[in-house]
Structure formats: C-alpha cells, structure tokens
Length: 537
Image 1 (spheres, rainbow, N blue to C red):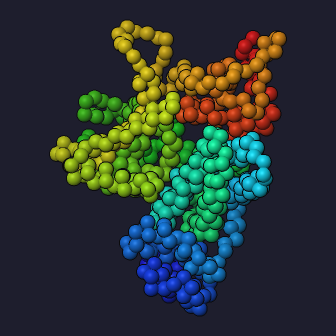
Image 2: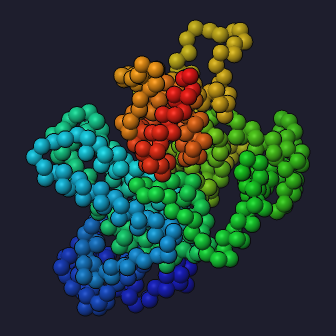
Image 3: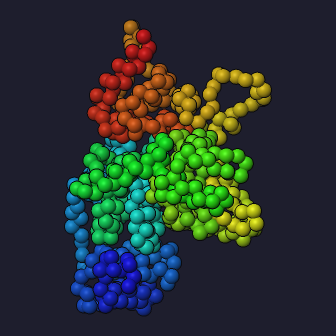
C-alpha cells in the first residue's frame, strides 16, 4: 500500500470517486455542477487530506500548470463537500503559529478595506499597513523552507509545488503595491490593492482548508518539534515570536541529540559524516557514526582535518551549494555573510522542489544541459541600487568526465565592481575578510551613505533627536556602531551584517525595527537615543 495513502488512512473506494470526478472535470467530461452533484451523492463529505491526496495522485496525468490554473475551480467543485477543518492545534505548535499569523494579517487586511472606503487619501496609514504586509515574506519563507520539505519527505510534493506558485503571486503582489505607494503613484496603488488583498486571502484560505489540516495528519510530533526550533531561526510575520513547541520526552531527546551532534560553530556532525562518506571513496574509511574531526585526510592537493575543511567552507568569501547527480541538494556553505536564507531542511531534497514553479524549468534545463555535456556553466546576476549579486552554476564531473552534479556559487560583488585603478601595495584602510566586524561595519556605512536624506537634528547641547520614522540609514550615519548595538539587543538583527543591509538600510525605520525585534517602539527609541548620544560625547 502507498505509504502516503496509509499514513493519511485513505479509503480506496472514496479515493477512486474523488480522483474520477476530478479527472472527468479536468478532461471536460463533467461540468462544475455535475461534478459537485456526484460528489455530494456518492461521498457526502470529503476531508482536506482526501482532497490533497487526490491532487497528489493526479501526478503524471496532468501537468502542474493545468492543476494550478484549475485550482480554484477544483475547490468550487467540492463546494459543500469539502469539510471545513477546525484548525485547532496545541499552543506554540508550528501550525498554531501559522494560524495566528493568518488571523493577524486578516486584521491588517480589514484595516486596508476600511481605508479603501475613504474618499481622502492619506499616505501614512497605508505605509503602516504595507509595512506589516511586507513581513508576509517571512510566513512564506517558513512554509517553503520548513513545512514543504517535510511534506515532500513523505511523498507529498505536488500540492507544495503548486502552493509555492501561489506564495510567489502573493509576495509579488504585495511588493508591487508597496512600490507604487512609496513612489507616490497613488491612483495606481489604490487600483492594485483590492487584487493584492484578494490574492492574500485566497492563499490563506487554501492553507486553512487543505494545507494545515493535511500537514497535521501527515507529520509527526517529532517533526513538528524540529520544525518549531528551525522556525525560530527564520522568524515570524506580524505576530510576536511564540514559545518553542514542547512535547514531553521529545524535546529532551531532541536537545540531547543536537548536543551530541553539534560541531565547530554549531555545524552538525551530520555534515561531517556526509563529507567523510564522500572522501572515503578516495582515502578509505575515515570514521563512521562518530567522525574524528581531528583525523587528517588526504584531499588530493593537501592534507586537512574535517574541522579545517569545515572552517574553510565557513570563511570562503562566496556562498556554495552542491546538488548531486541524482538532483538532490547535498550541501551548502553556512557562511556568516550568507546572502539569502537557507534551512537545513533542504538537504536531501530534490533541487527542483527548492525553487518556485515558474523557475523550475530553468533549473531542469541547466541540469539537463550539464548532464548531457552540452554546457558546463550558466551565470546570472542581480543588479539593484547599491547591490550586485553574481551567481554561477558549474557542472561537476569526475576524472572520467562523468556528470556528478552541479555547484552553485553566489557572491556579493558590489565592492569589486566599485574598484578602480590598481593596488599593488599592502594597505589596511579597509578589511575585506568575510566575518570581520570592520567589514560588516563598512557595509552598513556604505549603505547609509548611498541614501540621500535630511540629517538628524540636534539641540543646542548637540543631542540628536529620533522618532519612530527615523531610518536605519540615518542612525548608521550618526553612529555606525548602532548595527552592533542592535544585534546585541536581539540576534535577529544579524542580517545587518550581510550585504542585504544595503537594501534594508534604505527602507527600515525604527518602527519596523521594533516590530521585527519584538520591542515596544518607544522603549527602543529610548535605548537607541541613549546609545547614539552617549557615543557622540
């Protein structure tokens, strides 16, 4: 019996009816009304997991794009049949958190509804609303990096790929509306808002009706405990961070396992074991379950310990990812300067499932061209004001020319593109080493210097005044040390030490920083005010 089917306890006869009606409707053999009538007569009701499993089972018969285009119609097909889930979960359970976020963002959407009714346009209330909506990226990121991979581990991958496309649609709609607002294109902005809210609510409805209840039935408490821990590392949207999801017996054993497996800089021995397995092909066994990090390995052009290899990966001035010949993500370098967030849950996952549906065809084409030997490299770049990211994919082949996978390299080349002339003498005026605090500080300063804005005002005693609208770039101009100070208040602000500070500094206000760091805005203003004025003495 299919393990996924067994896990969800799907009844064979009911399953055949659901799939048959879905297929006949998609083939045009049944109208929406006819299909709905048959479902009501033969099933009466249908649970969310039955609906989702039938969608998964259409795999190979219909393309994802066909299901995507018909998803709303398929839900309408089950109108009055699909049982509305109660969505009741234990407090702090990862799905409980998703529900809390959905409830919170609906309140924001209701505020937007009220503003749309007003005849007079006032920008500030809208900025507040879209400051909140912009956080929805974090909700989507947790789904894509946490929930989806765990579902796919159980063979539940088609619904997640389709859902990812809806995720991107919501993210892009919010970003587009927000950009129009910031650019003072008020008529275009107001025209875009209803569709943005509709996409947001539609996605949330799909989560509540199908994704969350199916996930609750399919995943174990052990998986949810692990998910909760990693969720905290990614962050939350709109709501205050919840507590960890605790299950007596599971958290204790998970913590012990994590303690046993943690290695240098928090990198697990699971990585070391995988690396040892790879190296053992050339140098023989190097350990086993308990790898000796001090064991010296002959690595083709030198001798290194696993600890040294691990340190080298962490200090490379580039981000690396490796996908093997089976198209499974096997490794990424966990560098402090990492440009885009990653989660350990992507390890062992099919690479095509790590990308939104609209770009999967590009991934597949790269792998296909590399595998055939037709191509060996593919390069891309992201060019934004104050930020230039270079990405290159390289085919990995062994000494016999056999395709062994794909190596992705990503680098922030902003500083490199700015270099002029030549430097042939040793100069210490700027440290360019990854992870060096002075480099991170200079990134923040560069970001602030690129933003043209009125400087902070000061009174007769030279004391600066800030408020909730004061931008991060203005704070950095007055005191570059404020970046380290914010990180000391909350580790969530570690991203200010990455190249992304060049984007964040331009738009982040103290109000936004307070929301992100779970501070009372007035309390944070007081702390920053005292810090800046103290440093200016």
